[in-house]
Every structure is written in C-alpha cells, then in structure tokens.
Length: 345
Image (cartoon, rainbow, N blue to C red; front, side, top):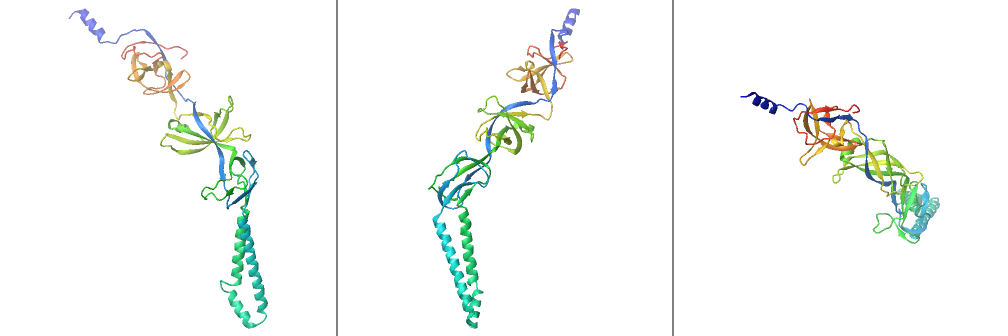
C-alpha cells in the first residue's frame, strides 16, 4: 500500500484536529428563588348564617347589610304569643299547686289521721313536692326559650346579608323552608386560599410572608402569612389547598375577591443553569452541546423554568461542565473543537 493511502486512512480514522473555535460557558449550580402567579380566593375568617333558635315572628331587625357588630350585640327580636300564653299557664299551674299545698298544710293541724294521710301522699311521686318541682321546671324551661326571642351576634363581624323583615316567620335551621335572618362574617381577618400545584408543594414554608394583588387596587401589593396546609392533594386538580391569614383591619379587602398570588418557588437542591441559547430543540429531543476533552458531546436534557437569561436544565450535567453558548446540531458528536471561554464567564 502506498504512503498516500496510509495517510488518507489515518486521517479518516482520526477526529479532526484544529477546528473553528466555539464559544463556551460553564454550567452554573445555584439556588434559584422565583415566583409563579397563582389564583387565590379571599374568604371570611368566620362565616355563619344566623337562624332563630325558636319559632316566632320577626318583631324588629336592628342591623342591616354592612353593619359592623360586636359579640353579644342584639341583632333582632322575635315575638311568640303562644309562648307567652304557655308561660302564663305554667305559672298559674305552679301557683295553684302552691295554694293546694298551703291548704293541705293548714289541714295538717286538724287531725292526726289527716296528717298521716297527707304526709304519705306527699312522699309519693305524685305528691305536692314533685308536682311543684315539675311545674317550676316547666316555667323555667319556657323562660329559657323566651330568652331566645332576642337574637345576638356570636362574634365580632359585619352583616353581609339580610334576608328577613318584620312580620316574617322564622325558626330553627332544621325547619323546612325556614329562612335565616342574617349572614354574619368576620372580615377583619381573612383567609386567602391558594391551590398550589403539585410541583411547587415541596417549597411550601409555614409562616412565609407571601405578596398578592387584587384588581380593585391596581399597583398595590398586599401580604398574607402561610398558616394552614391541607397536606393532601385534590385528586382532580393535583393541587394542595394552602391558607394564608390576611389582616384586613381597614376593611379594604372583601371576601369573594380573587387575588393573584406571587407564590414563591423554592427548591431543596441547587439548580443547574445554562443560557437559553445553549438549548438545541429537535423533533426528537432537547439537548446541549457539551465539550469534554475538546470533543463534542450531545447531552439530552429537560427544560426547567427560566431565571433571567438562564434556564434550568435537568440531565446528566455537572456544575462547571463546558457547554456551547449557542448550541446547534451542526456541531456533530465526536467533532474536535477549539474552546473559546470568555474571561467574563
């Protein structure tokens, strides 16, 4: 074989030596904190529909929608004529029994036999003492129910709904078709409920202060504190409900608003970052061009989230690896190149 042929075989079987220089950068490993925009919902800290505990007619309503009330404040009064007659009847019965007992006591002094007979009668369950106690208990029970004709606020809050007016028949919530009187909500504190997607669940930090905005106040930022975590994913949406407590002392925010929450995304491990221009996307895969020992390698990666001019990547890369700044599939694997590493990198 001639010397020319031997040289050609050597050149064909050996990677090319000096090629066009390629600009490279190093893979950077660092912690990345960013924010994703998630929808939320503001709810009252406490909310209750107020029903009457006894059946009656509305006599007066002392509050209306928007009224700020204190715990124990009278909200409405009811009238129940039947109850008043029942109380009068029970009191009359108790009084009659008292008179009978007094009359019996007078007769006790008349004869010994009468005394023994009446004493035996009073010792039985149907005696005067038992009857009097039963009558007094009935009166007390009715008077306790009578107190429920005055409806009071169970906590500090704001009346957000009024559904009845004087003359309306109201009663316990178990009654069919019985209207509630009012809706009371505590809105000086609010619950901000955020559905956090599964990929961000690992970064939830209790007591973290999280910013959010609402359409009612453009350009203004509010804050809530992470207070309650569901610790379970919704099977349909694959999200976890997280509650933030929001102070609303000036009542500027309202329950029912849908804020945009700037949710912080934190990772336990540092992320690998490369310039976005380093990613090469084909119909088959996404890869970066790594230079190892001056030889081109294609390394398949998965794209993460952007962090400025850089982007997170997931794949068999390491901190400090050299990748081509402007990746291209024209740099074929196995090609030998000359590295140009800017000093500012």
